[in-house]
Length: 208
Image (cartoon, rainbow, N blue to C red; front, side, top):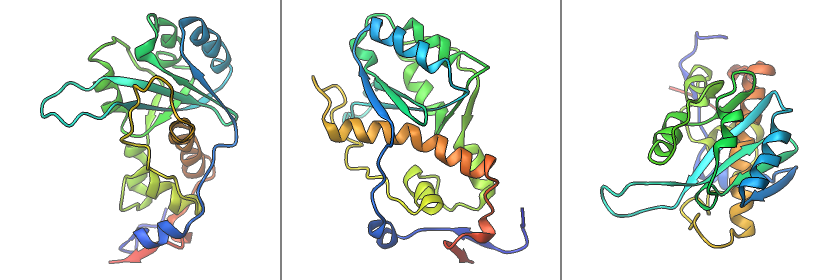
């Protein structure tokens, strides 16, 4: 990778707003019971790479403990949204989270498992955090939305980020948002690592 020029990859709010919205191309399944979770895990075990993310109900009280409401695990063609606060036994998730054979890609993995540790005792293995990869490709921001936009010229809408993830029923907008956030991690990883993305060829170079 060329390091000779002092530049970064940057996208403005105006440029971002003009991009078409991305949509998840696969099937999204909301998982509400331990039995559904076990069936989902058996499907996910067949994949070699998965995208990972979590969502928590926002709290605006200083010092309040945050709890994970939703865990998203996505493949290219299917994404499962695990409503872990509603499921009494989530032990079957260990088959994915603690597997060294399945690569899991996320953004800010440490933050996800720090919050999960308030309620669960997972020993995560086989994870790749995009935050540790992206800086070497000259991205000025570690925002998933901006990274994805620069790589694919599509916009991930963030309107549902602070919505109520403990709602009795998730809205279609929440379901779509949650799936895209996990799936986008696979897309980014593949573009950077597998397809050997070269920032020199990007249209979003800003020289400093």
